[in-house]
Amino acid sequence: MEGTEQWKVQVEQLKVQMKQWLEQGLDFVHQIPPIQLYVGVGVLLFTTVLLLLTRLFKRRKSNTIVLSGLSGSGKTVLFYQLRDGSSHQGTVTSMEPNEGTFVLHSEITKKDKLKPVHLVDVPGHSRLRAKLDDFLPQAAGVVFVVDALDFLPNCRAASEYLYDILTNASVVKKKIPVLILCNKTDKVTAHTKEFINRQMEKEIDKLRVSRSVISAADISNDFTLGVPGKAFSFTHCHNKVTVAEASGLNGEVSEVEQFIRENVKF
Image (tube, rainbow, N blue to C red; front, side, top):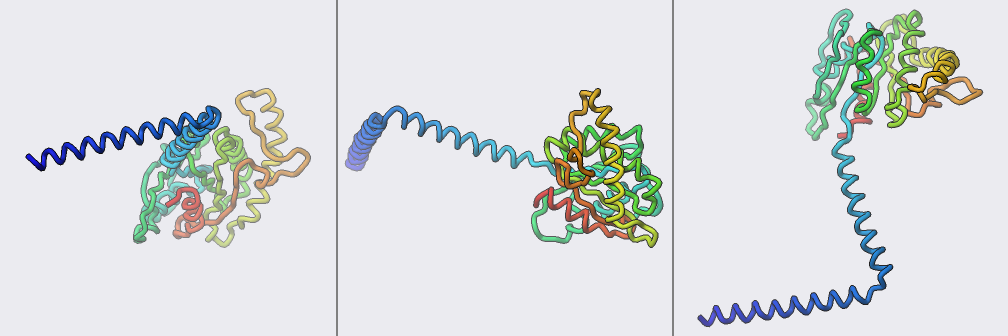
């Protein structure tokens, strides 16, 4: 009984103390000028909202990398090389997008915690390229694959396709990085990435003149490339455009892996 009475006394003392603290807190608040009080509340609310948005943005950071390019450029071989290190002999033509979410094959043995990559191989046939629009809005990066061995006959077509990607609303607004990947560079007669870069810049320079006339009457395309009065350069693009080399059949894909990891963080 004596212990119970002592506990009740302690509870009553705590209630009295809490009441005093509450009264002191209210007195302090009342002493603050209204303007300062409103500012303080506003700063607190702004900070809270900012933190919530930051966390939301981080959670929704895309891990999608889109492989695009003309048919026969080697996109599908690169897809399987990145996924499981397999080599597909000959040409593998895709009629439907290949999709997969996985840790890159070269990283499987690493002990670090790695973020899986969602890799999408979009068919390069002209009638199937519309599927690209389904994936670009979610892309963290685009790999545009060019056949360095058979480049010149396809330079115009490849440049037109790349132009469409670089003026795509999602790519422009979100500044999605693009890697021009010169594939099959292990072959003796393959063109260098420097040559391919120059030739595609020249073709796109011609295209932007003809396309600018069309886009003036086409309200669906509000974006143009380049700087007026200057020859086109990939450095003039709204987003970052880089050029690299690879050989899908030989497993030489380190530069594309580097691009992927620069845009899909660990």
